[in-house]
Amino acid sequence: MVTLLLALDGVPVGCGSLRDLGAEPEHGPGTGEVKRVYVAPSARGRGLARTLVHALEDRAAALGWTRLVLEAGLQQPEAIGLYLSLGYAPVERYGEWADVADSRCFAKAVGSGARGPAPRSPAPAGTLRVAVVPYADPDAAALRDAMDAESLLAYPEVEAAVATRGRFGAVDAALGSAVLVTVLARLDGRPVGCASLGRLHGSGGPAGPAGPAGLDAATTGELRRVFVHPDVRRAGVAAALVRALEAEARALGLRDLVLETGIRQPAALALYRSLGYRPVLPFGRWQGDALGLYLGRTLAV
Image 1 (cartoon, one colour):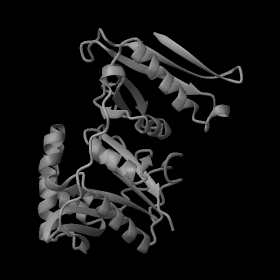
Image 2 (cartoon, rainbow, N blue to C red):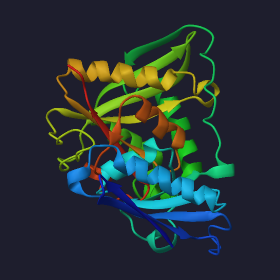
Image 3 (cartoon, one colour):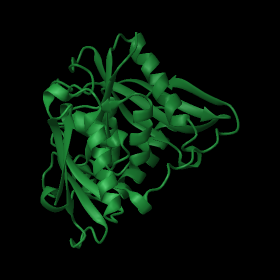
Image 4 (cartoon, rainbow, N blue to C red):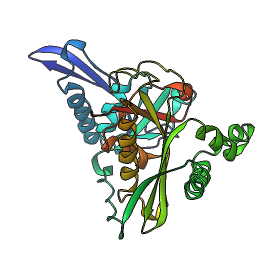
């Protein structure tokens, strides 16, 4: 175990530790764990936690480690936001956290294992148009069917739960009953993406300091079923869909938007963060879900 102490003007204000996980079979050589990162309340808001984590990463690289993992609870959205901003990506829960439903685990390559960001795809050739359509629009429904098939490959453990609710068709219809607006993206007339804005499911609770100040069902909407055809991903289609729904939300008088995305969808997580969404507490029907990450933002007037 390695522990670093952070001092400000000679006064200790923070600490953090590293633990060697190289001997653990589920991690392997070169893996360390970031643990117990803490900054005193009186010293927060100055970027010291970021400084501390960077120092821990430098120490890990000096030790020859190539990968760091860590755990953060869903009740700590600010901590999750910090780690995401530092390049940590969600991974499966490990070790003592494996069966803790409200824990989320993250990993990052460091030292010689570090890699640059994935290149952005070029903008799709042709004309992209986003328009409001009925939820039952055949093209939007076909895209949601493709989304469900893809989701089942990424999250096979949800198949039994979906089956008890009548499979994806019944689940989709139930979600549609609470939808306020659906938008469809067409590229030169070809349907390539869809997304919906729905009413907030349940009153939830405070969204936490990293997101909207609270979840008022009357003024909060939920982004749902955002999907882009694989052929045109990483080219701005999803961002166009989200921005279109944000405009519709403003027109409806909504002030805040929240969403859920899965731990196995790093590209979706990166997209939402690039659009200004930040971690919030679990809300509504998602409370108790073991696979989700929750984001939100307050809309500009």
